Length: 287
Ligand code: NAD
Image (cartoon, rainbow, N blue to C red; front, side, top):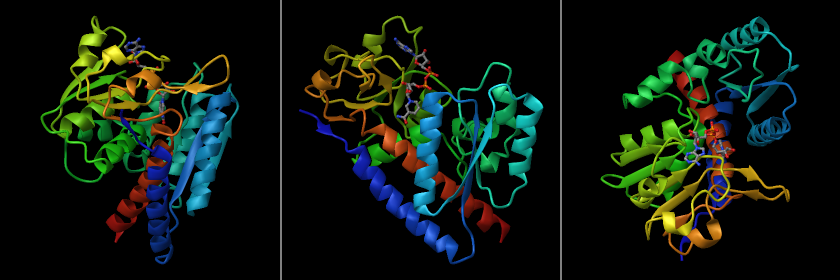
């Protein structure tokens, strides 16, 4: 029977550390600041954004919500990004996905100052991650939270097989890069993968971020594997579930994350941690 990773408890510990770092910055007259740009009224985005804001305020981080109507034009959003790029009280700029079709999300991401790019999506930051460059730069917060979980549970990565199911630029790809940089042998699977079960069964570490409820069954998992479920799916019953058949996979895995209460809380905690990182890096660099 697998040990269940308590993402809420771990997130609480991380948030406590973040709060202490915020207090230290306050003694230097610095308050970290994050702006979330939200376009339209997508219900899930509204909830995510509210959760991020509440957590920021609780930790002493300045939080701004910049809302635009769903029919906003590109020039207006780009102007807002430019304004926050130059705003000294803002350390982190987050553009909440999904964006409506009339907006060019890539151009908006590329316009964010790399040292304020909290989601680590700017090509400069992605390039550094892929090149495994040393130094300080932001990486996507969900994979970062997963790495913190693995580290906390002393999961050995070097030389191990890691399979990541899902290759989005926000989750799967940076996850694969982080695991590969930690010397795991990585397989990055997608919906085009011919034999997904073969890819997952060889994994000592299996990270699933596909957005497909119960995609991974017990027979798809190597006995003793570490299974990290990033998926968040709302069933017609209203219940939240992951991409992994938790009930049965927990009999096979050695470590497993639940949904909810696993990766989700760690993502927000990592976002807060990285906002403070960005503030420290920027202000220390200015000294
Ligand atoms: P996405 O839709 O951008 O990407 C999904 C990826 O999964 C694609 O690469 C696709 O090819 C792959 N995929 C889909 N079905 C598959 C299948 N049957 N077999 C193999 N690969 C398959 O999604 P995303 O933004 O990366 O999010 C993935 C999931 O993670 C979603 O459920 C999302 O809600 C969740 N998520 C959770 C957090 C968190 O904090 N816990 C953060 C971000 C995303």
